[in-house]
Amino acid sequence: MAVAHNYENPIIVGLDIGTTKIAAIVTRRDQFGKLEIIGLGKAPSYGVTRGEVTNIKQTTDAILEAVADAEKQSGHKINVVYVGIAGQHIASKQNRGIYTLPGPDEEITRQHVKDMVEDMHRLALDPGERIIHVLPQEFTVDNMHGIKDPIGMCGSRLEANFHIITGKVAAAQNIKKCVERAGLQMMGLILEPLASSASVLHEDEMEAGVVLVDIGGGTTDVAIFKDGIIRHTAVIPFAGNIITEDIMEGCKLLRPQAEKLKIAFGSALPAETHENEIISIPGIAGRDRKEISMRTLAHVVNARMEEIFAQVYFEIKSSGYSNSLNAGIVVTGGGSQLKHLKQLVEYATGLSTRIGYPTSFLAKNNKDELKNPMYATGIGLLLKGYDEVDEMTEIEKMRLFADKQEQTVTVEETKPVDIENHEVFEEETPMEHDHIVDETANKKKKGNLLQQMFSSVKNWFEDENVNGDFE
Image 1 (cartoon, rainbow, N blue to C red):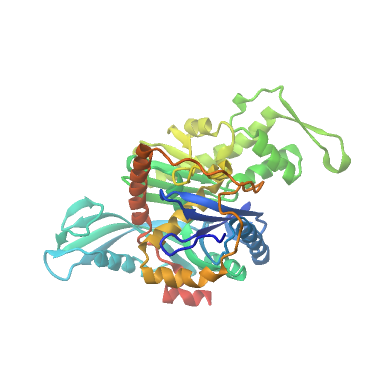
Image 2: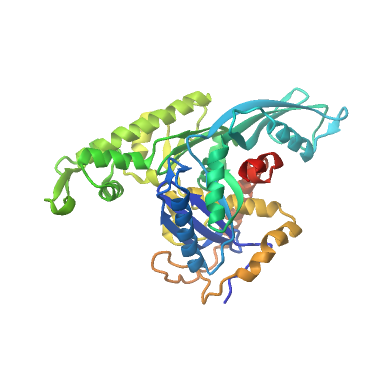
């Protein structure tokens, strides 16, 4: 049976190029609009350092490996992907724009707002930089302040505050080169903390004021929301890998041993561990076994996590919203799985904290492995993809997907598969009617937010002025 592929509900692929892993996630939407993951391919990432590609060949090979695994599981030939971008080169700034309408008391249209966004893309930047996102915040119509959506209103003067996110052209160029050498077409490039925010934050949290902290392998990404609007973004060049390196040095271990030790026994609070608890691990090259105290391990982890969240707290203070974050902090990413991290963050920042799981948009019959914080970015990229597809015309969808139809791989089953053991899950019974209504309402609210978040995204590789940098 061939994998279904139609223009209304196409199969979308997200490619998360991380510091520790590269993941290709293949999905389609079920009848309730939820994401049904039909393939997940992973490969170790050796060519990426702190979120930036540093070895083209190794990164390309890892992408090929991850994509091949995802194709095998999904039965779908992967051609088009949505990709995330991160790294310490990412910066953000605030800017204000003014637009005089053609006539007095003229109705404001979406085109007027787009013209303002285009003006923001003409800002002067440092050599080698490009704008990734221009995100409108509040609008002002004829001195009427605090307007979120001015379309349809009448006025003669439109003003707006914009949150502008920039990055280095070279970093994006390296990502594009790896993706294209793997035989793929890159449909979108999106800032990873925005993707993670889309998959783990709730509408109410963004209204009340919340900080997203995505602890990856190479970077810790920060995004602050208030009144449903993004207010501040930052990338901190410390994350899970540096904790592994600290364990290697502090406990005199090999990297694979240190990584396994961190995942299995790492705790962010030494006080929550017992001093007499000992971990015994094999010695290096036939040497005697090494015994490590759980308390010692926790001290090593705690020192680095306190440093990371000291910088997170600095970003919160710098944003000017430290007293307006009623929903506190949401921590996601692979690094969020450390034991007792929630307590440490609350102690270090004084803000209520929860761990963010990307489950809101996933169908119930997906494997539990996918409901892990380490896939928050990848699932956010899928949401971005469907958000763009929903905005396309029928002709645009046909142009994008028609030539891919013939390349669909034939498979025997299309039910969701166990990613590790390749076991087929049985179909679950449909959800209760009231649950469907509730989920549909939540999807609609989140969809509106996503459309607002991504409506002003500038695709670097469709801009004539930018394309020359990548040829």
